[in-house]
Image (cartoon, rainbow, N blue to C red; front, side, top):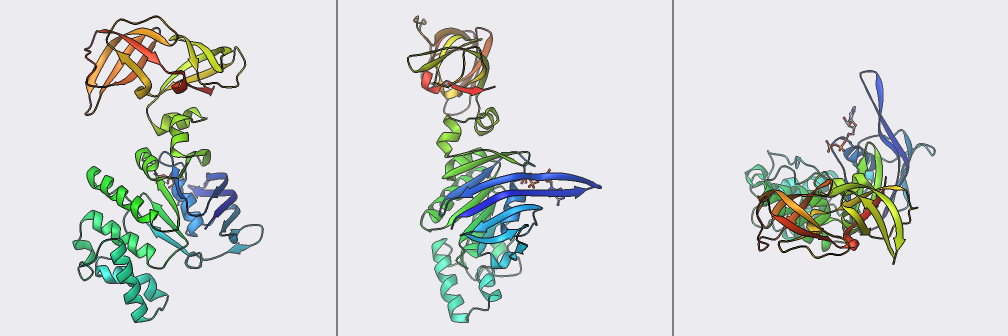
Length: 361
Ligand code: ATP
């Protein structure tokens, strides 16, 4: 089901001072998408999620779910949370320790007053779906962290919501389990025709799970796009920086040439992806470390090829991370272990113009 948000504002009052946590949010989340709200701590992700669910009352704007207005200041409409047809999974799982797995999952159906045999059938189906068959009579808190998260997911899904919302659901799991649970979650949701809204500050989670990502900062949505768009082709410096490590270099537009934009910067004259910017305009050249190509043999002459010196080298698992001094810049690069280099070496660096992104200053 599609979710539309128009002109949404939310202020909090604390110590007598008003603070704007959401500032004129406009957003359409297409039906059946996995949509992520990503941003640093305090940017307003949870507040936006809680406004959609109905746990927080906005100050301005309108929220529609499947075309139906669930909250509108102008129209004086405020549908209560339990009537919005949404399921929610929290960071803390919020499962009840004194109940069995079965009772935890059955709870939303019991509250709705469904018949016992219907509840049994629906819980059994959901247990099967989240692969928890056989543990339904155990106390929910006797399960592993990953299993408890699946109980929370099952409880959100059992009532067949139109939309499911997640608030940092994996952040209490250790790194390995978080990765496994993330894959499971993607697999489960792929099998359902459901809209999912997912809040996280973890960029890898956002990239791995989402169809679309909205990057937020200080109560605003800065940019929305597919994971690939946000990672490779961000329009904003903040977004490019937040979604992954990037070399950001001050540059000045020199000219347009053969469908590319040439800039002058601390690396010299560099051909970049085409951007419609006037000569003389200031820009930021953004290059991901994995696209800084480093070879140990003598540099050939050519466009976007130059020399550098390895200032530091760190082995981080699959690759080496290097800092390379070149021209007036210090470039971060990821180097394959089969490229034989050590600290102090002079190396050749080449940059593919397709991966030299220009962001307006
Ligand atoms: P995090 O990732 O840390 O959970 P977030 O992006 O989800 O952050 P929110 O929890 O939505 O951010 O908070 C947005 C801003 O509103 C923060 O500055 C927060 O301190 C403030 N805030 C949130 N809830 C309240 C409240 N009940 N009263 C006053 N201020 C609040």
